Length: 118
Image (cartoon, rainbow, N blue to C red; front, side, top):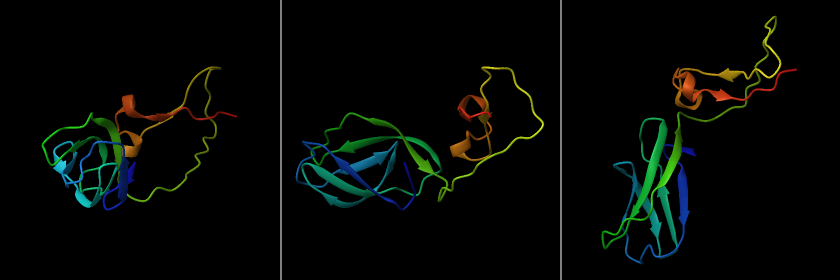
Protein backbone atom coordinates (compact mmCIF):
# COMPACT_ATOMS: atom_id res chain seq x y z
CA UNK A 1 0.00 0.00 0.00
CA UNK A 2 1.02 3.58 -0.48
CA UNK A 3 -0.28 7.00 -1.38
CA UNK A 4 0.13 8.91 -4.63
CA UNK A 5 3.72 10.13 -4.92
CA UNK A 6 5.27 7.31 -2.84
CA UNK A 7 8.15 5.31 -4.29
CA UNK A 8 7.42 1.60 -4.70
CA UNK A 9 10.01 -1.08 -5.50
CA UNK A 10 9.03 -4.13 -7.55
CA UNK A 11 11.42 -7.07 -7.49
CA UNK A 12 11.47 -10.23 -9.56
CA UNK A 13 13.12 -11.60 -12.69
CA UNK A 14 12.77 -11.14 -16.40
CA UNK A 15 11.67 -7.50 -16.57
CA UNK A 16 14.35 -6.87 -19.20
CA UNK A 17 17.05 -4.24 -19.17
CA UNK A 18 15.10 -1.75 -21.30
CA UNK A 19 12.45 0.37 -19.60
CA UNK A 20 8.84 -0.68 -20.02
CA UNK A 21 5.69 0.49 -18.25
CA UNK A 22 4.07 -0.22 -14.88
CA UNK A 23 0.30 0.12 -14.86
CA UNK A 24 -2.07 0.71 -11.95
CA UNK A 25 -5.13 -0.71 -13.73
CA UNK A 26 -4.82 1.46 -16.87
CA UNK A 27 -2.88 4.39 -15.35
CA UNK A 28 0.85 4.53 -16.04
CA UNK A 29 3.29 5.24 -13.24
CA UNK A 30 6.51 7.23 -13.46
CA UNK A 31 9.53 4.92 -13.67
CA UNK A 32 12.51 5.98 -11.55
CA UNK A 33 14.75 3.04 -12.40
CA UNK A 34 14.44 -0.23 -14.32
CA UNK A 35 16.56 -3.37 -14.45
CA UNK A 36 15.94 -7.03 -15.19
CA UNK A 37 15.33 -7.73 -11.47
CA UNK A 38 14.19 -4.45 -9.90
CA UNK A 39 11.88 -1.60 -10.85
CA UNK A 40 11.31 1.59 -8.85
CA UNK A 41 8.21 3.63 -9.63
CA UNK A 42 6.15 6.51 -8.27
CA UNK A 43 2.56 5.69 -7.30
CA UNK A 44 0.47 7.65 -9.83
CA UNK A 45 -2.00 10.34 -8.84
CA UNK A 46 -5.08 8.10 -8.89
CA UNK A 47 -8.17 7.96 -6.71
CA UNK A 48 -7.73 6.07 -3.43
CA UNK A 49 -8.70 2.41 -3.68
CA UNK A 50 -7.42 -0.98 -4.82
CA UNK A 51 -5.54 -1.37 -8.10
CA UNK A 52 -4.11 -4.24 -10.12
CA UNK A 53 -0.43 -3.63 -10.96
CA UNK A 54 0.97 -4.99 -14.22
CA UNK A 55 4.54 -4.71 -15.45
CA UNK A 56 4.71 -4.37 -19.25
CA UNK A 57 8.21 -4.99 -20.61
CA UNK A 58 9.79 -3.02 -23.45
CA UNK A 59 8.99 -6.02 -25.67
CA UNK A 60 5.28 -5.66 -24.70
CA UNK A 61 5.22 -8.77 -22.50
CA UNK A 62 2.88 -8.51 -19.48
CA UNK A 63 3.78 -9.84 -16.05
CA UNK A 64 1.24 -11.69 -13.93
CA UNK A 65 -0.95 -9.09 -12.26
CA UNK A 66 -0.35 -8.16 -8.63
CA UNK A 67 -3.87 -7.49 -7.44
CA UNK A 68 -5.25 -5.23 -4.78
CA UNK A 69 -2.42 -2.74 -4.26
CA UNK A 70 -4.08 -0.16 -2.03
CA UNK A 71 -3.62 3.51 -2.87
CA UNK A 72 -4.30 5.45 0.33
CA UNK A 73 -6.13 8.77 0.66
CA UNK A 74 -3.19 10.30 2.53
CA UNK A 75 -0.99 9.84 5.56
CA UNK A 76 -2.35 7.23 7.94
CA UNK A 77 -2.73 7.71 11.68
CA UNK A 78 -3.59 5.22 14.37
CA UNK A 79 -6.99 5.76 15.92
CA UNK A 80 -8.53 3.97 18.88
CA UNK A 81 -12.31 3.98 19.17
CA UNK A 82 -14.07 3.54 22.48
CA UNK A 83 -17.78 2.78 22.37
CA UNK A 84 -19.59 3.35 25.63
CA UNK A 85 -23.03 2.10 26.63
CA UNK A 86 -23.36 -0.36 23.75
CA UNK A 87 -24.16 -4.02 24.07
CA UNK A 88 -23.42 -7.01 21.87
CA UNK A 89 -23.87 -10.73 22.19
CA UNK A 90 -20.86 -12.96 22.83
CA UNK A 91 -19.19 -13.81 19.52
CA UNK A 92 -20.56 -10.72 17.76
CA UNK A 93 -18.01 -8.94 15.56
CA UNK A 94 -17.76 -5.16 15.38
CA UNK A 95 -16.68 -3.40 12.18
CA UNK A 96 -15.93 0.20 11.32
CA UNK A 97 -17.02 1.83 8.07
CA UNK A 98 -16.47 5.40 6.90
CA UNK A 99 -16.26 7.87 4.03
CA UNK A 100 -12.76 7.02 2.71
CA UNK A 101 -11.40 4.04 0.79
CA UNK A 102 -9.49 2.75 3.82
CA UNK A 103 -12.82 2.52 5.71
CA UNK A 104 -14.86 1.05 2.85
CA UNK A 105 -16.46 4.22 1.36
CA UNK A 106 -19.60 3.55 3.39
CA UNK A 107 -19.91 0.02 1.94
CA UNK A 108 -20.51 -2.36 4.88
CA UNK A 109 -19.09 -5.25 2.84
CA UNK A 110 -15.73 -3.41 2.78
CA UNK A 111 -15.79 -2.36 6.44
CA UNK A 112 -12.69 -2.70 8.60
CA UNK A 113 -12.96 -5.27 11.37
CA UNK A 114 -12.52 -7.31 13.67
CA UNK A 115 -12.34 -4.93 16.60
CA UNK A 116 -11.49 -6.16 20.08
CA UNK A 117 -14.30 -5.89 22.59
CA UNK A 118 -13.49 -5.67 26.30
